[in-house]
Length: 142
Image (cartoon, rainbow, N blue to C red; front, side):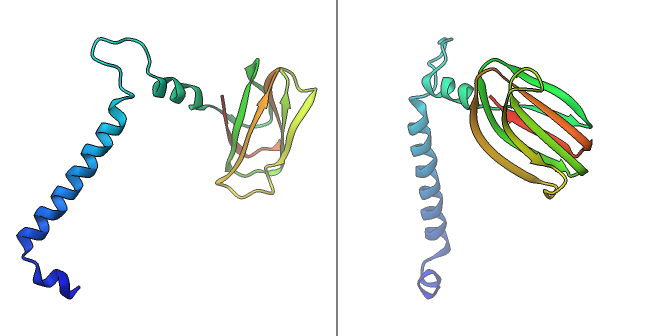
């Protein structure tokens, strides 16, 4: 700290501002290649990648059978917003409550605020069956 005490405040401030400005400029140059030019309506590669990786969500509260998506996709997360008592969520790769089970989650045993990351593909669809005094959950999927 003694080193900085010897530098006049104005000089130190100019050095910090210059450094921050150069970082911002470098970031703009890095991302400028991914922005469409003015009048360009086509999506850039970066925008397409973001669109492909952005998750959708479905909120489920209460005991129910919920078909979230028909067709192929990916299950990203299951978030337990509020845990229930004696409740489960059975996740199927199907458009009905049968077929290939992706996971059976004890939503009563997990703490509220728990996020479970799956990042697994499904081919037929995504259906979740919730039972018991259910927790409040949110499912992230693509």
